[in-house]
Length: 362
Image (cartoon, rainbow, N blue to C red; front, side, top):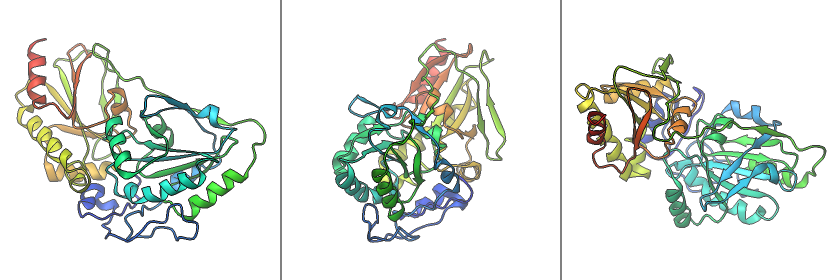
């Protein structure tokens, strides 16, 4: 998240999520998405999120040549879509309050324009998996195609917050990129539909990361600490086994209102790791999701929770992608030779005990 970003939403817990960069927001009556006569969401509306100036740099750039993984198991190759239809990608998360507030407008856009452009809901893939996405979509009445990002699209955008709207014309170039829905999105949609393809289709290659499997050598990675200094995770052999606790600085605060069942899991994992860290014979590292998190947010988390292990922000999402982490808390166990042993997910009832058992057995 950039220092200039303000994401405003209903619960008081959001203040803890976004720290000094964000402000609280009371509940408002409606959202503007999909209604050409409506005004844009404003501070005080749960659908509001201040724009990130970085996103304007995407306008005019070639769209991503990426294959989106759909929750039904199929794939959509955007490179083959460009030229035939405009494309509207909305990145979102099931627990994100502005995302939820914007969904009725997004559904209306799909109903209105879905025959003239490809309207795709792309879950950001952080804290969510395919089953959660499908359940949320059914409950919320979402009828557009549903994809879940493996991190490749988010990395191309340099995604820091959701919701995020990307509208791409028939020529493959980005026409709009922004957090808010409303009149700007409506105008971009109409421009995209009215424009005809002219000249070659422009696309941008997107780097992908194949998630590690047990036995694979863990590569070196660079994270950031609470003072924005590099934290180097080195590849190769070490004197002790290593374990990484994957979580977020907002799991125990923001999710109280939108996904309360995840809060005790994050709290329990943090406390259990703290309990065993000094006596486990394991070198521990806490890695926090990059969404809605900058070094300042990590500093506040450290001040509030006082973790006993070193923590860092996965500033570009590389670590989460490398280990294939979607839902958290999760723990990755790495042996002294630098190979991945196992990744333990949020449904493990005794993850730290399992870590110690794995370490003792090797």
